[in-house]
Image 1 (tube, rainbow, N blue to C red):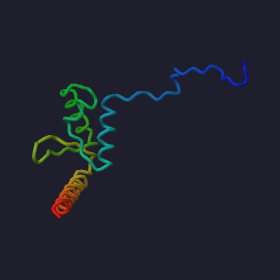
Image 2 (image 1 turned 180 degrees about the vertical axis):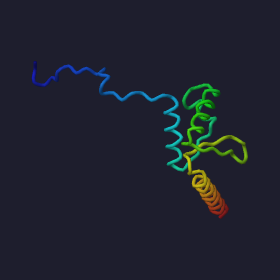
Image 3 (image 1 turned 45 degrees about the horizontal axis):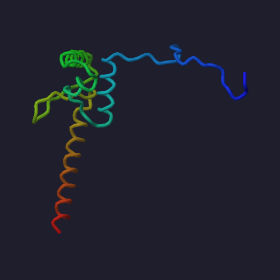
Length: 116
């Protein structure tokens, strides 16, 4: 065998590849990741994000809520259900209010600068 060539390596070796997660686990991880980053996850986004029917998304959400890992609230304007990690509801709510305030402050500053 020439010195500059490596021996053939099998790429399809299943023992070294991680097992694929179920859709329910992927959805749970997605919701928990969003919660850790300070955001809610709307149930309506799950069906198109994970390419599953809406009734299947609701079924999975119901199971996760019963399990106690997640909490839900409803959007005050649209009524949509939003999910987050258990115990982080008010923390994320506070972060949302801070982001809204900051956004409105930036908007006001931009309007003042444009009017000068």
